[in-house]
Amino acid sequence: MSLRAASSSVALLAICLLTPACSSSDGGGSVASQSSDLAADGAETCTATLRWLQKDAYKSTAGRTSDLWPPHTTTTLEIACGGAIVRSETRENHGTKPGEKDANGDVILVEVAKQEASGPRARLLALADAYAKCECGTKFLSMDALGDEAVQAMVTKLGDYAEANLTCAGDLDAAGVVALLRAGEIERVIAELPSCAWADGKSWEQGLDGALQALLAASKETLGSYHVCNNDAELQAALFAAVAAGGEAAACDGGSAICHGPAWFYAPKP
Image 1 (cartoon, rainbow, N blue to C red):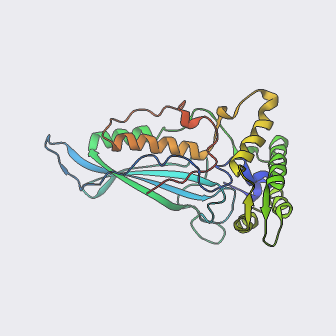
Image 2: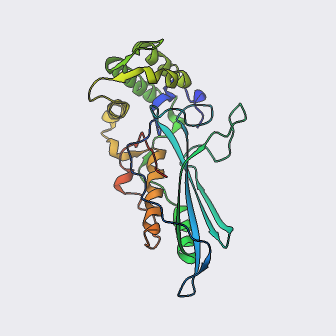
Image 3: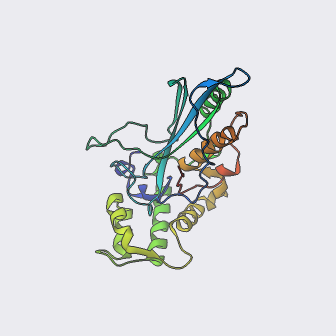
């Protein structure tokens, strides 16, 4: 994700935005991995490993630095048999690729969770096939549109919401933090957030939803028509969890409830 370049509004819009982890599901529990072996029926047993990689949304430097700001989530899947990787897939989820580095030479995406599952080789390879095509079918809030006037209007509304409901006791007051947000100074916003607190019942999620809904009002579209990168990651995690629980791999349902409405925050569990 190219942040600063994406403009001030960058701040919270298509994100997986305003980051602390989504209040989303973790995609299910892990299953103990096994070394490749022959099961009772003679089928080879292999291991699938799903990894979640994150960065602070709309920030141009590496890593995940604050749960108070939304993340961008990328996932990877590896299938290993007999100690050797036989299949490797990546879902960038409309964003940064694993291994990409920032201007300081640091790898941008960091691993935040990993789960393993064992099963017959054929079943796990079928999982990889399904995973390679797994994404939400609703509209994606593209970062390419962050410079559009409509998105600028959304960021303005989000800023108004934050200024009215956020209290900051650090070097900057809420108005100062909002000014940074509108200017696209994401790293400075994140640095100030620990000294800020929301009024009862208020949150980044509520502000983002309200700002986006206001933007969509003219077109009569709804929040449920859109998803962000975190929704895709959740859908991929759900696919993995189903196979880890012993089910057969099936094509992801792009119309799943997981895909209806931006998951601004997402915190997968190991």
